[in-house]
Length: 343
Image (cartoon, rainbow, N blue to C red; front, top):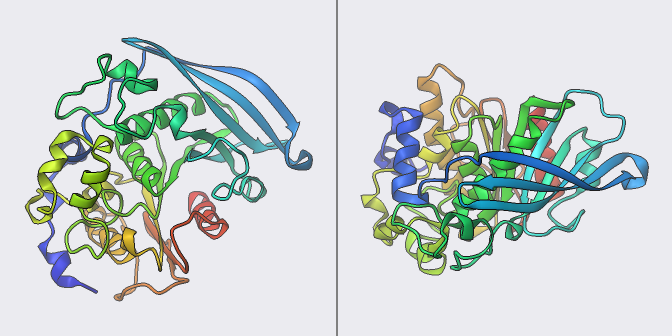
């Protein structure tokens, strides 16, 4: 284990959650918009025989009233037929609206007794530097934003919280066990949503890497310079100042995990996903665990070594597993997520 790296990290221990978030918002992700005036869900279609009758699939349109106008986007709601309250639920940020898909094994999740509120991230706003479309167009009417206003990651995270606004109105969902989950860039957004919105029981990050779960210092994979050069619109403009200057950051990504305390957070890594740096994702959990321990919690319960494929550590408030293979959201990953949300 790289103790030298761990000892070199900024310490969030003296900061409150709000102070941690203020630092991350002002230096990395940008400040998220204010909540909408109201949120309403319109039911457009219902399939009561989904997955051979074992589940219900509702097609919803979530309508949001913001200070600058109304915006609506599609959400799919899947839950086991004949549900018996309370049902754990995942709010899933996905790359596709198709159900199921390669990263969303819907039937297996339903068989596990969980519900899912699922949306395609580009139905919210495009994954590019255009801030005139979707929610971005409402937040930034002229397509321009100030230095510390959020980028696209913040907008996708904000949308996940609006789905949470709906989720808490569903009687049979277990409000104490609603998590937010995403893979890759959407794993970053899921962590941000969970940190920013205390209603989330847990945030699940799968292979989120740089600017997600992985420490920026000492990375063997993608750097802040790499990600900001290619995707500057994901972040606030202030983040660019740390390109290839990670050592000067007054924070690192364990701050994002620490902002979940005392709630749960789960980090999933893939052993061959070098660009996401699974070692630094694990070390980020180790570092964040200290913040939890100072609150009298278990934090990250792990052996005094680096993980090997097949390892899963889920005893504390921070969960982690290392799966063999590459950058992918698999049935195996979902199995670990379901186990953690229920424990």
